[in-house]
Amino acid sequence: MTDKIRVLIVDDLPETRENVRKLLQFESDIEVVAQAGDGEQAVVQAKELKPDIILMDINMPGLDGITASRTISQAIPSAQIIIMSVQTEADYLRRAMLAGARDFLMKPFSGDELVTAVRRVYQMRPPVVASAAEGEGTGAETAQAVARPRREGKVIAVYSPKGGSGCTTIAINLAVALAQKGQRTAIIDGSLQFGDVAVMMNMKTTRSIIDLVERTDDLDRDLTSSVVLPHQTGVNVLMAPPRPEMADLVTEEQLRQIINKLRTMFDFIIVDTNTSLDENALAVLDTADRILLVTQQDLPSLKNVSRFFDLADTLSYEREKVFLIVNRHSKQLGISVNDVTNTLKRPVMAILPTDENTANRAADQGQPIVAGRGKKRPIGEALNKLGEITIRELQPALAGEAEKKPPQKVSFWAKLFGRQSQTVSG
Image 1: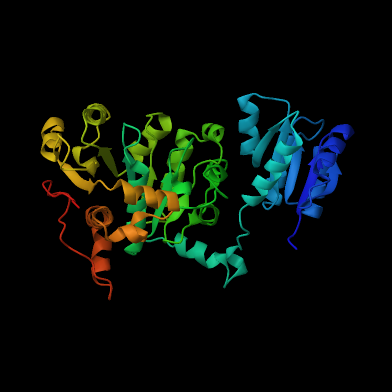
Image 2: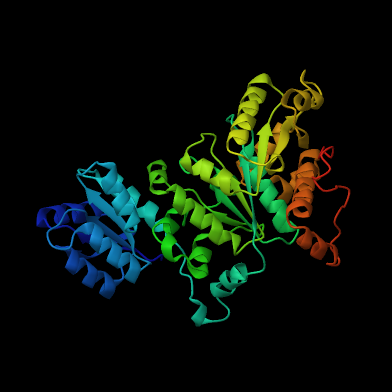
């Protein structure tokens, strides 16, 4: 028999607490363990009972729901808070989420809405991470291994000004290719509203960037390691927020601080960016050591990429900061790679062949191309070669270390990107 979800109900109105209890009483997997009439009682009962879920009213006399939530989140991280409120203003949502809330229910809500929220937040709860002091044989080993400093990591933003260009596929597979070559690699889902990294890697968003934004002033390795989730391929993933409206909680400065913290923990940080050039996207592009600018062999894509190069000049980006990649390359199309180079007056640094079947199958199965059956196909080989050149260009010392590691064999066909005539082809 599985454990029940233990719920604490907090509201200053007794009739509201009773109505919520009645909505939950017939759910076999949910148990209401206590009720509290104000924030002070909520804090005391949360510390004593350690419930799984706390249903917290936002407006209460004395200690209000937001202040109580902040206190409880710091004292009992395992308790997941769902805010209940009649307030619909975005400021309330922002304050609640920054205080540690995991979801937001608008009053009045139905029984189905309540039960669904309780189960969803319970399923998304983070695993219990042992502290470093608790020693060996626990998740602390993984956190400490990830956190070992070596040298400043390199940030690579994968960006296209045209939606549907395959940036997420490229970002994920580049990250996995780097991890497979022994590099400590993290990927950030920078599409904060509608990110697809979790889905395409078959992961649950139990933690996200939201868990870091409220503590950017005192980010440490233990906290960051507990939020950046490990994937079976060896990549560490910083998820986008679980709900689109929560993207507004992430500011430009917070995003910069998080990226800079990850630099101290990983060799490479890959950022899958949003198409829209908002403040957060520009912060990523400014911070990045390299921008992989993705285009395709069609006029709309080339027009948008040309405009981005104009913007890059306006922002005083050095020419070598932006690497042009042609994705879904096909010799059947009327615009050739030479045409792309001549039109944009920029060299094409990498060519990724079209293979919609392999890419779609990998996305549907939640398995990166370079980690599955597609790794031996031309698209998989091209993505792996992109990883090799990335190491040689951005972390040449790491490339030298990789060459010395037996029995791993690495292809050295590629020269440095400094030789701008070099391409990666399928």
